[in-house]
Length: 316
Image (cartoon, rainbow, N blue to C red):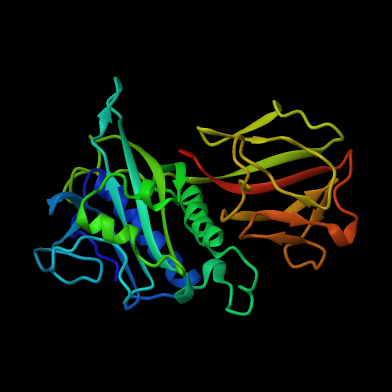
């Protein structure tokens, strides 16, 4: 179930936007639904037995609820009855000299890998795959492409690090949980927004970031220059030059994953000034990984030029 607020304002407006979009995407990709995935927005860090636990106040029941929705004050941790649980913790916002709030946040997931289909992979396709990495990338890629003003700052998969904001008996129990098929991970985020906008249902709503098309002209050269970059949005740059090879993976600087992963690309691509249509068999572009594979066509060779148009979040 996706637990929502009736009138989210301020930072909760952005939290709920990301929460809802991500919930809908993961229900499709992971094969989960209201009965197997509980998604919570911003949680409270509540004093509990010998420490603190994350809790969500449900406006419908007007009570704090645990991972499975029961009002037991048990916190949000693994629950064997569910395939997935997620929530977001937020630090105090800081306002800069232009009045913009910068909020540090962390979205946390507890997942039973045996009960989901990471990357949309069937059980047969999952053989030999690192499903933890696939599941993490499902979330990471969605946030990068549709972040509702959130930007990815880091990823943690060590459960001690994931739960560092919380401690006590319930955290200790989570650390001792059987992790054979279970995955716990966190993605650190930053949110920037104008607090003078979106102050309630009767006030002006905060404008959502616009996805704008940007054409990325990439070059295949024998000796790529790592300092040759293309700016995308306001806060990211991607590598402009790539070495010859069978595949092309446009990468954000400092990031080993494809910048295109999970983002909407627009066809046709161009390759050496020739249009590559979406439905042509020789266009082996993978929308999930953001990698273009031309092995069957001789790969990408020195001197080649490629243009790919992608929808970019102006705030990413």
